[in-house]
Image (cartoon, rainbow, N blue to C red; front, top):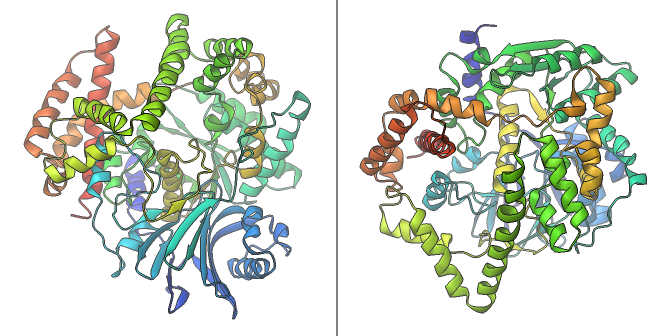
Length: 624
């Protein structure tokens, strides 16, 4: 397949995907819209109505036989809810969105899966709620205003996303993954129905004797993800995707099924071809290698991503989206309907530096030292800067700042807000929010001492900041949207509730066995693939390649876009001032690479800043 043929990837991403739309009102109850591309089904009786979209696995948990038919699943959910009520949500597994209207209590319930594989959004009006897995479907409904949220869009431009509920449209909110929403009368509230650890924070750490449980949980997570005869694998050379590929190959072989094809991109800056080939050959997987230049298309990755954002529900989070769309096209030609990835491995198998310092504060020096040795051995880092970051940036400074803000919030909340507001004013670009009213609201939010939550929902306080990150939610929503548009769904076994319940309990010294990051999986992979070098493989980062592409392709993309008329018309930027700033950034980008680390960082920030503006502008042109 040629690069010209692969331009169809962006065209596929521009298609209108199938979706569902459900309406609830006090007068009419819960109704599902009907049409040829609806992705949900409904089941009901005189007491309840259930709307279901997605795919459930392990349906025996609900007391019924396993079935792949959505209509049967909806009926099973209805019967289970009549018997057990809201308790059923804790037993659901799979990729799903569920809406239930209980006429006995006149209560509306809705939720998406525990880790956000299936999208779900809602828009409220007096006495009614509209729900869909598509932002676009909602804002194109005549009863849902399509006005953009200018404050949220302004914050996107400076990477200050403050809320996991907001979508860029004033009327459309995100249903958080793992939360159950309950509408009773005019009150909408939400609380977690799934916790990766004990809700009270009293974690019972796993012992070394419990580690073998990982094998069965990982196998179960992969089994829930595969579709025999129609599954492929996006195979990088990293530990996460290789772990998924190994379990999938072993599982399908044991079941007497055909091996899943593997598809890989040959990235120029961090060539993992040898590892990818070794893994595929050892497992016996049919393997397709795609040169990066071919995957990124004739127009280049940056411009392809800009064009994709122009058709997307929200500005792209993942710059690599068009390249993986091209890979998905190849998979589709092979008859693949589902691809597995190693996404989630970094989140669940790695240990953050903040965790290490929390151990040091409690005088657990050995555990902090274990983390230090792990980072030194597993990454290309120098001792001095690493120690400074662990002890100062992510340690003492982070702790002191957090403690100071908490103290200010408790004793003098106005002083805390003032401090954060002044910091924002000092860093705010001169071209941002020329509209004084908009600027005042952005400043007000910048002074907020806590995460900003939707005022339409009363949230329980049992949240987990790690799981509420809006960027993580949007990344999984992008994968879901790509799958619907291209007909090739993305499954991520590391984002599995039962597996993650276990991984959340594994202490760092066991997760990083042998002073190696991801030691929990590394040792067995090194034994299975002795020629791949996993025993001593260090983390590979894609930032070098993405930065180079920004340097090379952003100036041309800026010229093709011809300014920012949409952002200007919305009063979000002063176009003339922004143009001057972009010209300064372009001059900086064009300068030859220097030896100074500060100069390199400045060029990188300049390039990514222009990309962010292009990304948001392209998206906004759909709506203004």
